Image 1 (tube, rainbow, N blue to C red):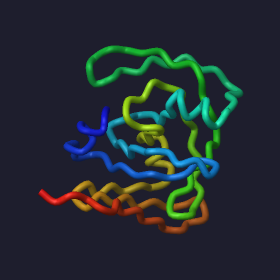
Image 2: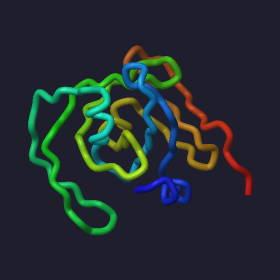
Image 3: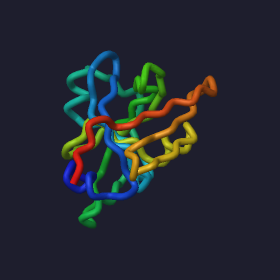
Amino acid sequence: MNSRQAKSANDVVIGVFFISSFPVKVLFDSGASHSFISKEVVGSLRLESRESVSLDVSIPSGKVRSCSRLFFNVPISISGVEFLADLIKFDLNDFDVTLGMDWLGKYKEKIDCAAEKVTLTSPSKTKVVYKRKGKAQG
């Protein structure tokens, strides 16, 4: 999914958050079964994978792509609260990280697409609400 498709989709929200003080553009996507990180961010952060997986991913065009690297417990800071994510290295178009149902379910996430708002529950049971700022009218 690219930025233009995400803006017209009704099951996603976009935001910029941090991995180790590095800003990343994140797509919360309830239509994705897994969570992904771009090859560029993996390189920029010099993340090291301790596990190789064999996973075929179907993309909206109908093509299937193979993935092989998994990064465990990557800390994503959202509104000052740290959430851990297991991320698969993948060629992402306009996003650095896509958080899919595996991650969204873990943190009892609720997406309000009309308000461009996401509500999460941290491991310590803290409620975190992210609302996208600066939404263009029209």
